Length: 379
Image (cartoon, rainbow, N blue to C red; front, top):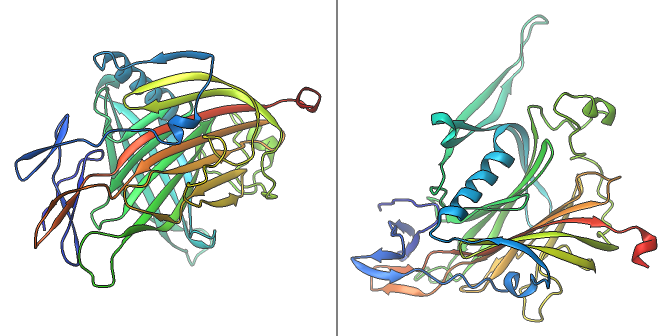
């Protein structure tokens, strides 16, 4: 079994009982055993169909790739550069806790600002000291997870105040995707992990992908996201007040009339538009649900965080992974992001030993920044 990774362009190769990742990397297409295969078309279902406005603010288009690449690089460095301290909480599809750890995430520029590296430090255990004057020790594991520069940001999409990674395939065959939102000194990222499911006979490609876990990453710039820090203390910090990332979630949907801005990444361009006043019926970026849309689960989590996802991803079926976040209880502001993906696409190559399928695709990525209208205006 051999593997070469690209975070944006990969093929799934399935043997009778194991998943093999095969190297597929080419600018406009994939190479499988020397045969050029066209890259799957980015269709933008549901996201593209539901995100319409009569008054667009403008668009950043990929004319020769120069303006678009520069804009994406600028968003990455302006919104995500820094040293974040976070708490990573993993839950299953019903919201039941699985595990939790603390981690630092450094996003720092090098080479005179022309390159940004992402280094995570995971604190997986601690050793308590037995004497009163000694310090406790914490076990840390450091991992460089990404290196980015203008025009070289595979698998990364930025729009508005949001960021998305993937979809991509891990070494053990899981499909992962990440959706993040930034507000001031605080950031929320949500990592979705799906496991391949096979037919009872064990042969052929996966029949579906089943959710394994959802990891919610609550982060603050230059400080840990403390659960019990008074709001006055947070506001007095030099870097500013952090979002209330641990406040109780009463489960009430964000009803009312909302308006704001929407930025949409589709097929290598970002368009920006106004969101006309509208009532939010569900925690999503694409409007009312379609009758044939796969059923979505909703997690209502502390900190004003709402997460929507399908439990099962069927072959070649577009789905959306959605994150909504109200950073402060008192401020009528809502950030929403939706990542559209399609996985387990068409079969590219099949023989007695292996089946090669098209790589997963990002269909679209949309981010909204909304403000709630006063009751007098929404009546």
